[in-house]
Length: 262
Image 1 (spheres, rainbow, N blue to C red):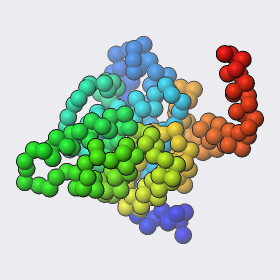
Image 2: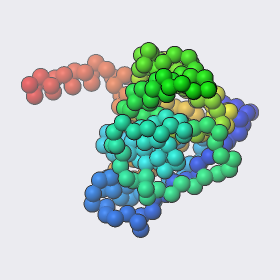
Image 3: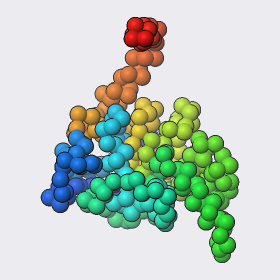
Image 4: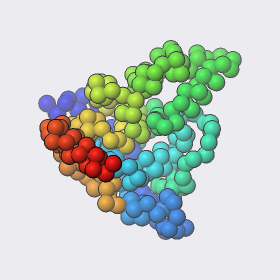
């Protein structure tokens, strides 16, 4: 039996790789091309149904994921492949220089979730539902209730549970932002269902809980390069583990330093 019964749904890959057309980049001295990870970026290959992009704040993982998503046809502010709206143009031009390597068959479903702009997606859905149309209200694809009538975490969970239908490409930017540790574990189970149903995930995250998904590729952006690492090699795991196993000592050192600095 394969680990976690992976082969029940197959090892479906809709995107095989994404590359940067470096020869077309006008300059590596202005944003976002001056980010260390972009300056060294050539090609990122996807070899597992679940790939995590990890790194400290400012390393460029969200910028990189956003560019990938737009290059793959998603709306910059998030949503399904069919969503086309704009509340504020805040995305970089990096996507214009990305080349996507795809595999057949094409994904039947897809979604780009950005924690920071999901409010805008929810507002767009409500606006579309207020307009008269022949079909069912869009909110029924999200559990039947407006996302604005749910807490931030409930809205995220409703999306994962109801909107994600399988046979899809799902790109998520820090999905743990609104999820409790228990919900993060529930998300692992939901993601596994979708992987068995021929789905591919590319996720930027800080969560060691999410990174623990078996056989996933964890790509770190630290030190200005893309490197595949094990969960235990990530700073996220090491720092969390050190804190929880030596909480009193670390709190004493942290708070003592704070008092001295004060």
